[in-house]
Image 1: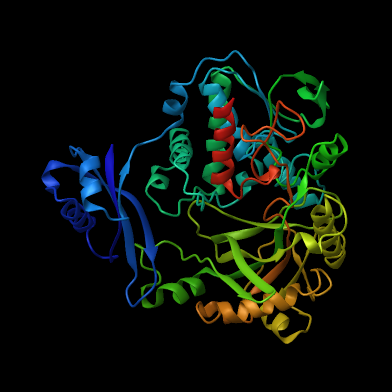
Image 2: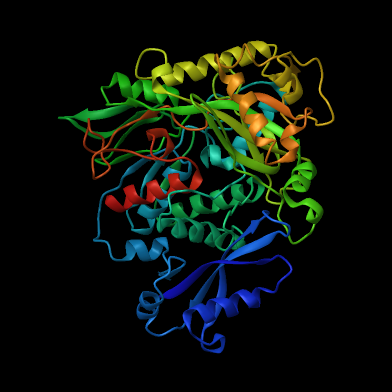
Length: 521
């Protein structure tokens, strides 16, 4: 056990040893008697001088619990390190060999947890391994030929493999540490353990994902690519396996980690009688600013200081029924073409580890209530499909994306050309109006949000900022309800998991959900 002292704020130029001394003083111990290390660190751009806000871990203290109890402060807590190996070490043995459907973050960490326990899972992934998946994405970008089973959404690593590799989450779950630990053990940089807003970057994350797959295989698991699940094997009200394009696979435990874009699989499940509920989600655009403008807006005269990370933001606005918020912010990144169905345009964002691209981008999303869905359980999917199809037509029906300048959106007129900020969407953009692409009222919410955000971050008032549409895959528009043991309400032996089941929103929360379901098995 150790003690974590959080919330120690110092100017960026101050030595970290001052934070160590402050933490030791708060705990009433001498720094010479303990091992002090930086546990978490984040940059705070508020005020005249940017600061680093640190959490300091003190190890080697006797009677830690008594000290924490005596101090009785919310920023002083006990800490016990958690990793996957220790989590599974005390579990009872099992001879079961579960099936994991999908190899995104939730499926990957479910499979890794099961493999570490000796349960030799079988992973079925509809897309390709990353080595081949990169080729399919490149063909789509260069030749506009989409592989609907292997693309930005589907394949080894899931949608997270082509993202910023952001490892931030709001769930505050102790298993998050086990996820970070597993990433580091498989090649991720160790600074993700200390950064309060950790990210890996697409370029570094891909080989880490491959290493995790190889670890699963070394432990006896199997990962089968180009294997799409087309149905369930059922007997007496329970799942006994799955049907795929490569034959049937039998197991009395099927973890369903299909991701938020497996719309065809959701239809199959609905046809089989699996209980599914519509769930609110969000849609919007990708907005791009120059990263150097964002840095100046956030850091002022300290912009460009090598001690500071590339600036990022998290913004929200609400005025009655109108709302808008930023999501999946990618400093120094690019906008990617994330379609997974023919005749539809989808955007997402990604960054490399260095976050050294010219532009910063983020989703500006508008919440969509279930009441606004078309009829049917899968109404949210139908709504998103309609927006994606409208974007395909507006872009010229060749996967070019529609785009509009912020200046023109605010003035209510279509864009005729771009400005000084060059869009990064790889298929190119077609300038115009987003009014006919996004649902009614969306551009009004975006206008109000932009005006509000410009009051706190100056570059949001830049008329040359680019908005590329649409961002429709912020989260799943369905939820597959489950029992307290994580099994489906409809069929025992079926375990809905992660984003596709409506229980996660990002790499970390999806991975944690996978671990919890694997632990329950």
